[in-house]
Length: 182
Image (tube, rainbow, N blue to C red; front, side, top):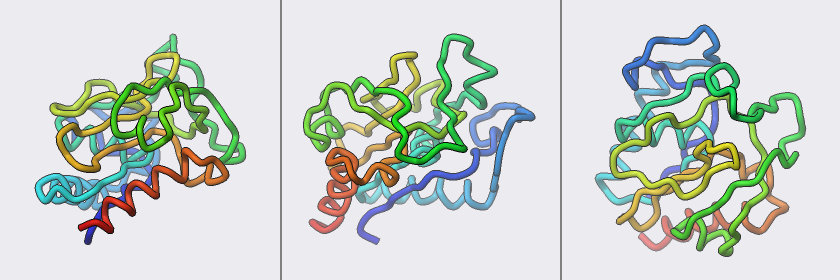
C-alpha cells in the first residue's frame, strides 16, 4: 500500500483509551479497532501518507495515546450539536477555524471552512506528537496533523460528502498525490 485512508464509522471501544464504556456508544467493532490501530502504526512507522476522516481522526488520536469524549451532547454542555445523522451529507453544520499547516495549505489557505458534521464523539486529550490544526467555534477538535511527516492528517467532518467543494476534493487529491509520489 502506498497510502491509507481511515474512513468514518462506529465508535472506538473505550478500553482502547483506558476509559469506561458509556451506554451511548454506537457500532463498536473490536476487530476493526485492532486492525485500524495496526494500520495507523504501520503508516506512521513507514512514513506512508495517511488521511483520517471522522472516526479516522479519532483512531489516529487514540493510536497516539489520546482519549475521546464518548458523547459530546452529554459531556459538554457548552458544545453545539455535531451529530446530524438524518440530514443530507452535504448540509453545512458549522465552520472550522484552521491554523497554518498541511491541511490549511492543501485546502487553499481558507481560514474558516464550512463543513458538515456527523459525529457524537471527539478528541478529549490530544495524543502525543499530534497537532490540532482546526477547531469548531465551540472548541471541538476538527482537524489534526502529525508534524514532521510528509502527509499525515485527519478531519472530523466528511469531505467525501462535500465533493462539489474544491477544498473537500483537495484533501483526497493531497492524499493521492502523496501516495503516488512513493
